[in-house]
Image 1 (cartoon, rainbow, N blue to C red):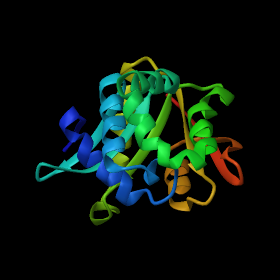
Image 2 (spheres, helix red, strand yellow; image 1 turned 90 degrees about the vertical axis):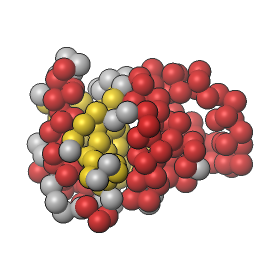
Image 3 (cartoon, rainbow, N blue to C red; image 1 turned 180 degrees about the horizontal axis):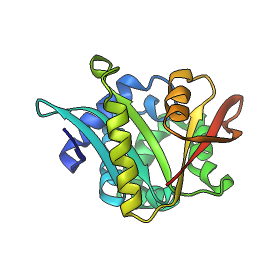
Length: 186
């Protein structure tokens, strides 16, 4: 079943993110931090989930305005964030790069993350969730949205290109790590 995520799904979504997305700054953070982030995404924007036997097995998260999403998150969890991020202070540059990368780009609505548990990959769930994601973007009057994907994530690049995304440009969110920006027109 494909559905809009509920707050109760956030812990399962966070666990999938942490297990299936091996690289990236967010994956290095504690599960409880990711859970709070996904609660904010569900409350402030939306997340599509694939459910099998009452368990979340995949998700797609999106936002109309990532700056507003980060602001919403920090208003709710500022002290918690400081405590969690304090040990990562050596990565303060990555924190700021992650927070401020959207300021460099023109298109604000964004597909933030898509992931499917490894046991359920190859069954078309990502495609089904993506179609539901596009429908939700249309309901929110979004005409175009972007996705940022690491240059070395070939399966993700292939998925986005086969789903109708158009390459726009290369960028660097974190120094020395190339990424691609793709857009999807509705």
